[in-house]
Length: 337
Image 1 (cartoon, helix red, strand yellow):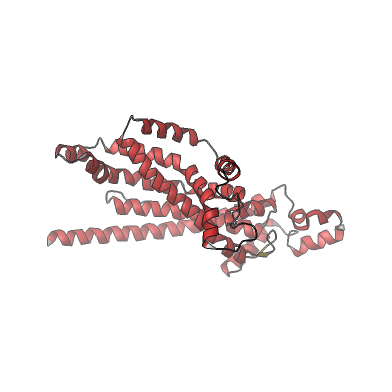
Image 2 (cartoon, helix red, strand yellow; image 1 turned 90 degrees about the vertical axis):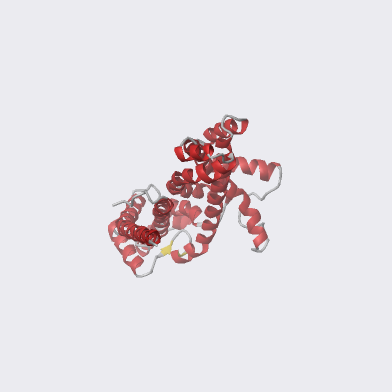
C-alpha cells in the first residue's frame, strides 16, 4: 500500500515537472519568435532582390517610373523596415497575416493549402528514418564486426556528408528516369485528379529521400548507444541469469539506448526542416517548405516571416517533445531551469 502511494506521488511529481517545463519553454518561445521574425524583416530589407522587380516580372521594363513608384507605395515598400515589421506584427496578433505578393493570395490561404502536404512529407520521412534506424542500428550492434555492421558503418559515414538535394537528383535519375518505377515530381500525374493512390505514389520518392538523408546519424547513434548499453551492469546481470541474447538485447539493452536516441531526434528537427525545403523544391512538392524559396527570392515579407516562424516553432516543439519524452522515459532526468 505504501509503495503504491509513493509511486503515485512520484508520478504526480513528474507530471508537475513536465507541466512547468512546458510553461517555461512557452514563455521563452515568445521572445525567440519575435527576434526571429524581426531578423527576417531586416535580412529581407538587406537582400539584393528588389520586391518590385519580382512583382512586375518582365513587365518592369515597360513600366514608367511613376507607375513603379505608385506600386511601391501601394505595397508599402517605400516605408521603413521597422514600420513594416510593426504593421505585420500588429496584424499577426489580430489574426491578419497579410497578403503574399509572390503567391498573390492571403498568407493564411497559402499556409492552409500547403502546410498539410509538408506535414505529410516530413512526418513520413521522419517515420521511415526512425524505423529504419532502430532496426538496422540494433542489428548492426547485435552483430558487431559482421558484414552488416561494417557495411552500415561505412555507408552511414559516407552519407553523412551528402546533401538531400544530391540524393534527390540521384533518386530521380535511378527510379524515375532510369527504371521508370516512380513519378518524377508533383502531387499527381498531369491531368489526373487528386486521389489517395496518386498522392501515395508521388510521396514514395521524396519521403524516402528525406528519410535516407536523416538516417545516417540516427543509425550510427543507435548502434553506438546499444553497444554502450550492452556493457552495462544490468545487461551483464541479465546474461548471468541465463537469459537468451535476444531478450538481453531487446528488453534490457535497447530501452537504455532509446533515451539518447529520443533526444537526438529532437536535435535533428532543424536538419529535417532544411531537408524538407530542399526535397520539396527538387520534387516540386506543393508544401510550405518549397514556398520559402519563392518568398525569399521575392523578398515577400509577410509570407517569409510566417514560414520562418513555422520552422522556428517546429524546432522549438521538437526540442520540447524530446525533453518531455526523456523525462517520462527516465525518472533520473531532471527538468531544466
